[in-house]
Image (cartoon, rainbow, N blue to C red; front, side, top):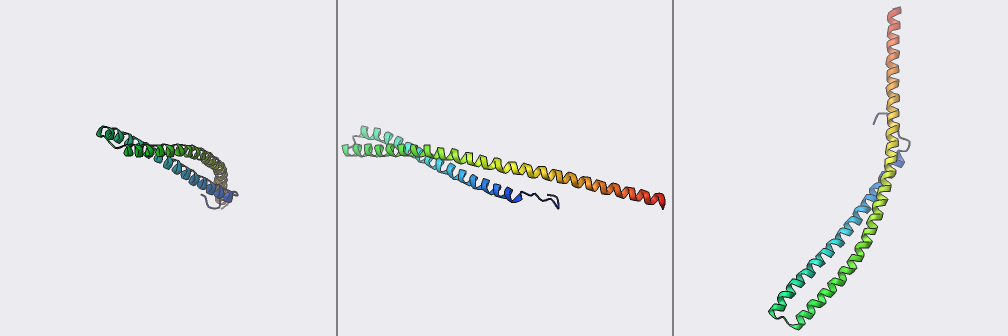
Length: 150
C-alpha cells in the first residue's frame, strides 16, 4: 500500500476477515466430521462383506449353529450401526451445507469491503499522481520563469 493511505473501514475489514476465517474452520470441521462418518459406513460395509464371504466358506466347511448365530448377531448389530451412521451422515451433510453457506456469506461480506478498500486506494493513488504531476508542472513553470527573468 502507498504511504499515507488509510482505509477508514480497516477495523471492519479485519473483523470480516476474522469471521471468514472462523467460518472456514467451522466448515472444515463439518467436512471432517462428515468424512469420518462416511469412512465408518465404508468400514461397516467392508465388515459386512467379510462376514458374508466368511460365512459362505464356513457353511461349506460345516460350521456350528452357535457360530452361525453369532455371525448373524454381528451382522444385525453392524446393519443397525450402519443405519444410525447413515442418519448421522444426513445430519452431518445438513450441517456441512449450513456451514458452507455461512462461509460463503462471510466471504461475500469480506469481498465487498476488499473491493471498497481497493476502490478507495485507487482513488487515493490517482490523487497522489495528480498532485505529483501538479508539483512537477509547478517546478517547470518556476524554472521557466526563473530562466526567462534571470
